[in-house]
Image (cartoon, rainbow, N blue to C red; front, side, top):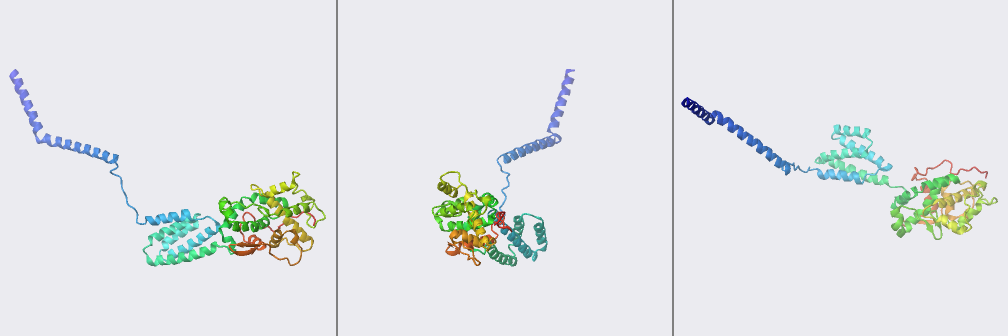
Length: 387
């Protein structure tokens, strides 16, 4: 019985060994083992590659990279959103679309559609620049584009310049920023006195542009950098250049019913003082760097006083800003009503070119500059007293 059991066990063991040694076991087993090892190696290698960024795509630089940067710089730095610039950019876009239409009408139509429906002029011009990059090897197109841009550049320069030479200087741009800061003061004085705000500014321009142009050292130090108006404090005072004896006469005529400059009871207390030291208070009013209210007030009252003087004499000058500004510059002694008043006043040199005070005021008044802040009114003086 034991012998039989031994024989059976031995037989089974030999059979099992033969099975493990057979190809039916070895091939699948080693195939599975190698496959599992390969999968493990692949996963391990992938992890290592990702961990150490061996799989990152280095990429390449586009051949037109320089042109893309030029387009970015062109619109980020030089594009200005003022009215004249926007109008010209619209014109430039149309001209370039027409040029593109001669070569690729389909693309021109797409850009024209964007032009009609977009409110961003820069994007339309960028679309055209993108087309130019694509056509940079088209010699005929590029030659036509070069000619067009050359003509547009010349035309833009002409369009951006004022017919009034003195308005093309950099100081004029600084002045516009500076006077805009005082809009609320000028409007307040205009409301109180009934004198048109633009008329007040016309006199301010003549006084300030002279200082902006001639007082170069002060301009470089603080007027230009800070964009502020120049306050005079020697022979004339304030931003409008009122002389002390002129200020005294303005105050006196307000209270003198027998004067030809008298404006009426409504205005008698307009410039009353709060202290007994009127000289100091007057100078403090006019030379304040923080508040130019009284500079504009004295100027406006003067304009209204001489306007009334000439009107009483039968020579109305309400619609003659150049005469009113000339009188403002020369003062009361020269204000003699007549039928043929002359435009003039002090001669002001702006970059060596001479102008008269009255001419500068006239040119500004009718130039359209600062019109959004100080529009021309049909009625220059709001007069409600019997003259």
